[in-house]
Image (cartoon, rainbow, N blue to C red; front, side, top):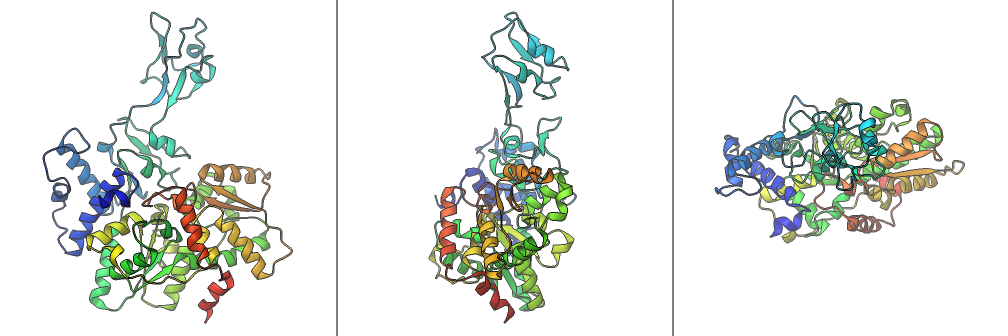
Length: 477
């Protein structure tokens, strides 16, 4: 089935079906009675993933709301569907069969809440109503018999922004959340999802088609080269234009612009943290506010090239297409709203293709030739560091020694930022990528895996003869 080979998981397929159906109705101006959409997706009376078809449809109704923009009062682009979050075990600290019923009872002594009792065999038992998940009992158990079973979403969230509410459903702390979407991809029941702005994009395209005034540009992330594995990249570009976009521009060209300016800023300031990953920037601002002054003043690559297009093409509309849920939050910020009109992920782009019955694998190949090798490899961890090193050379800044610290995933980011905050970091430039692997590991990707890195590098090598200076020189003509 073609749907399953387009995505990693069946949860993604279900999400895609909702997006596709919403988009189909929106194109035809039939998005009136949204109550009927779940019945269109699950037409029969036999349950699919849940206990009954009625619960399935109730959950699908919530997915439809998110596909249409979600809760406007919630500033977070990530939301929990409470009714879908009921199949995971409660989790937390539990006593395993390794408990030997010892006489020491150190676990009981360590527990300040009186949550531990014993049966007739002296085997420990944890009262979940009293337990506060402090882990003190697990630390003192001589047999390591007390283990912590976390839910997939809690495991995925490395910044501890997810906990359980009183109904034992996932709860997201917006004060901590960086909207990276790791929980979205890892939730095996699709109970955590990102809001979609697919209706915004359709409205922009339809308005442009009707008025023939505003040109709509698609700015695409370089990680797109690793995503639509059933078609060629040139066919994907043709498909985007078939949707009604006037032109397709590489965000990697913006990456070239950023690398060139960031190299200069780094040499002038002596220490810098990157500004390309919005989730990393958000994390730095929230958890390490003293380092805010060291964040690069450059806009992200997508915002940088979008700003250029807006300045040179009055009235143009910009849609960013990429792997990132955090980008959806970034473009909503006042300072960026004037440059980017909306954002969708690769998942949503696939839904748009199929909502218009566009089989990209049957299209002629178009050409994409904006950026250099270095701009294109921003998509994977370490790419930005390589680009800044190249930009220093091209600028002739030879008296500055780059000591780059590429951080692959938010845990490595935390380690580097912590060392920097204590002035013990052996480096002067932190490349922060919140997703493991870089942008190729984003929650909005169709597929994930090691092959994605190889595909991005191959895509980059197609422009290997072009320097960063060559790439950005055309912008000044």
